Image (cartoon, rainbow, N blue to C red; front, side, top):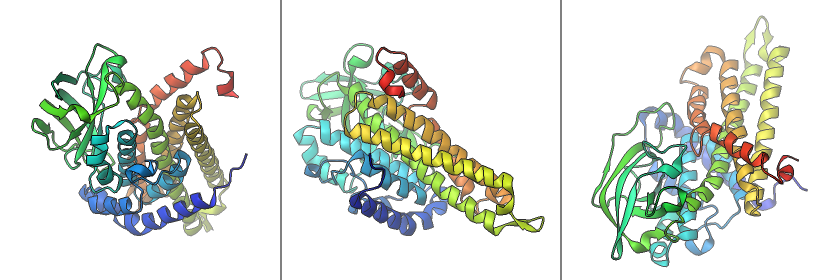
Length: 386
């Protein structure tokens, strides 16, 4: 058992840190304030391979492991949480197309997605199907060599500014087994977009609803076979949960570092804040929980790379714990800054706003507890909790 990063992991971590410090961090506050989706900067990330980290090399990706990806996403999030989070979503969609897409689909879209010349959105959630994703009602009816898609999706990151939509739609009966996955060009006839949502955070990526009205999609643009869509979605979300957990850890790390610096800099009652034991204890708890969160995320990623039979449970554990810890560390860092943490001259309030949604998306943390609890109560669960 070796907890040290490999030379390659350290090299990718350094490259991501350099990119985050020079391209993301200097612009993050402006992107947030002006709600700018920085497609040009995302394209630069694509040139470095950061938009197809674990996509196979055959489709233009880096072909790295999920564990490798945690190092990269953590560093990107330290520069701009919102933009890094979108990049993780694009990575997930690109990987899904590489694994389940037809040769035609990969030939037409693969290279562009891998290099971020074209960007993607993930479309699962509906007005009446959030946590209960298997209840989705968007339909796809086959007609010859095409499908006709009808329905509505909500909370789709990047929607209206991306070129490809990965859509889960019902091709069969009720429940998970009736769902299939489709890649849909975002400018297809019959697609309309709702207003850009005004959000608490994640302002450097647009979020919109999408309506599909008799949208024709080639049969070759279906991923996998009919009825396999929900399984594809859930496998994608196992990795997506690790990705967003990594973003929480990265943001919390930069918040912790800011708080540490501020405690040395700020003086009250004739002493530096760092000399007050109560604040030392607060910082100690923040650091301890953050280290624990990072290790749990990397453990879950390691299990995903090895296709561990309990990987879904560990991904849920990592997502629940790291996103809760990440938000709490950012909130505590804001508190340690006092009034300065609440104003936009400092990044703490943005860190709090951006990490809050991590406890909701990719499956709420309540649903993560459902996944974990059900597995623990099953026969043979001893190996999960030891």
